[in-house]
Image (tube, rainbow, N blue to C red; front, side):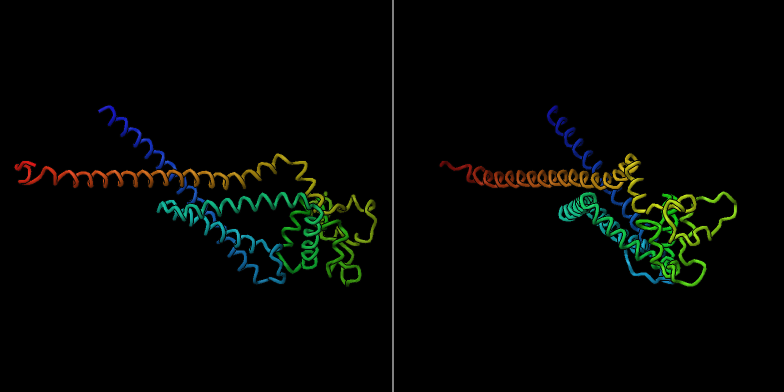
Length: 297
């Protein structure tokens, strides 16, 4: 009786572990599945609105496209996780784990490569920001992002404030009041309640030191990099917030796969034992069955 009770207790504990892993994985996959659907919906809505005014084709400068791609990946991968965890399908579970691991590895490699090849990264950013500056007044997405960055990081342009000469309206040879100037988001905070939108008038051709009290003179790329270095704790928290959920997903999926494999192996062992007992019973029955047992050998 004690042996039977111990066996039942072990089996109950094993089953409880399986249920915990299954519930955790289903919850994890469902949360990111819904989050992926939300990101995809926001991206589609933003892209529909962007199509009304779109003049720029660069995906790097179109947050809506980035949101759509991110949403599609999150939605499909998380749906695979939900389906795999509900059906206990080892092939789907392994596919889900490998895809999560691959995404995690790509992100880590991308971050390391961006740091190692910092000059190439800066060159890539300058190139795309330069294209954005050229279409500043035509692409509202980029305009809003650039204005926000210039205000928050107290910077102007990509490398420096003279980058705004690439814009057809701010070029010094252009007609109009914007010629040879910079957007008002480059200006040092106004002391008055009314924003002076022409505070950057005729600043591009001036010397850096002579305009530093009127506009921000450092470029936004350097300003952002310096902010990252000064706020490494915040950046570490953001990175952990991005990478840890994926690592947790890989880990919990691996544990669940091993638990499912254990249950399958146990089930096959029980079936083999039952079949062995049946064969033994069938072999033993003819020797002592029927009327033959009445006759001597």
